[in-house]
Amino acid sequence: MAFKSFLKNVFFVEILKGLALTFRHLFARSVTLQYPKEKRILPAGSRGIMSLLRYADGTERCVGCSLCEIACPSNVIKVISAEEEGQPLKRYAKEYTFDVTRCVFCGFCVEACPVDALAMTPVYEYAVYDKRDLFFDKEKLLAMGDRYFPVQAKKPAYIGSCESELFLLTAKSKGYPTKASEDQPLP
Amino acid sequence: MELAMQTLSAVIMIGLVMATVLLHVAYLTYFERKILGHMQDRLGPMEVGYHGLLQPIADGLKLFFKEDIIPTGANKIIFSLAPVLSLVTALIAFAVIPFGTGEVSFFGLKFKPYITDINIGILYILAISSIGAYGVLLGGWASNSKYSLLGGLRSAAQMISYELALGLSLVGVLLLAGSLSVLKIGEAQAGGFWNWYAFSLPFPQIVAFVIYIIAAVAETNRLPFDLPEAESELVAGFFTEYSGMRFAFYFLAEYANMIVVSCIGAVVFFGAWHAPFPFLEFSWPSVGIWHIFWFVGKVYFFLFFFIWIRGTLPRLRYDQLMKLGWKIMLPLALANILITASLAYIVNAYM
Image (cartoon, rainbow over all chains, first blue to last red; front, side):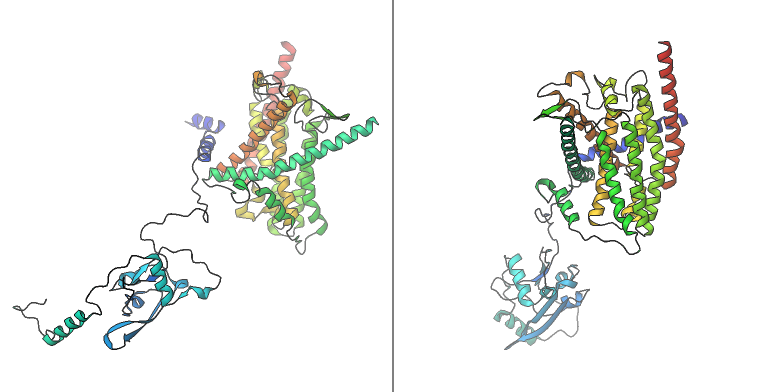
């Protein structure tokens, strides 16, 4: 055994194995991507800058509930909610600001949104000369959404329509259930 | 008149050899980066020119226009002379290296593919390369920096240790060839690779050849023996404080030294300019061109091997380096000389 290992040392067996490995890799396909010329194909659902979505008729989806602001772990989102004039039940985000420089792209805001008003675009190349350009307001976020999610869903009939107001009125006239009884289960 | 013609042709030849060598040195850096890159599944330089072919020129221009910084407390004269010493000793070794044979005349001027052939060629190269160690040592000392000094000291110790093995590994061949002239050693190996001194019977110098390769890698301060410039320990070793042109001089000197040891390896062990098989000795368009082709091919084989070794092996520890040099390489080289000399004596005396 000692003689065998001595022979292995004399004939550089281990070094020759290493040399063979590096020689094989000389002809292996390199993993480098020539980045600005070639770009990676991003996987579906990759998360870049967040954006605000619209309905197909052009109205904003956001109802200004601030749940995204609460869900955000790095306090990137700021929502100022307001009533639509003449329609006290209909609220919207008067201001919606989003600081891309501090965003960690976790996507919690998208998960928190009850009306699916938010979506993560695949934009990861957002280098700018002025850092303030990365402080997005509502217009910019909506523009992002228009650009990266061109297929917009139809607005459900019950939101902001006379049917919804009728529904609310009938619900109010019936009165809210005060006590859950067994013969009248909750709808 | 005769003397003037000879001088003129010698000057032109020196210019030609220097230009060729410096071009090859520049592109050796490119080949090294490319080969290392591909061995590590990268691409290497790709941006400047087609597949990065102009990268060495871009690097050279950058280093030319860099600010020349001399650190405070540095010995200014020695600091600026040391890189020159390193580069000059690396380049003047090419004076005796034969790139081929034959003779070409232009307008009455006679050119040979080597600058000169002196009868102590090998000794001259060894002597010159020893002076190169001073460039490294003085540069490290004059920089007024801990890293540089440590790098310089390590380099001095390493070069002295491995120069012994390097010189002794050549002695076997010198015994067999009976000459120190590089040209004569080359001429003695004509006709197929079985006549090259690394493989020639009755005394193949294969052990000496392996010792020579290891010592040559150590002598040129390259991985796995790059302790004088061990990046992870000594920043950049002896040229930590150097920048701009002086840094480029050290860089060129290192690569020129690589080419020198490859040339000596090719001449002494690998049959110089002779083709590996007799049927490959073509005579069209001319014998001389094919001689240069085979010589350059062998030199590039060695250079590729050095880069290959760099891409494969990790760095030795300092005590391992010294142990290998003094306890293994030196006794082996001495034993090789002893056996070769006694066998050569016996064969000459009784057969």
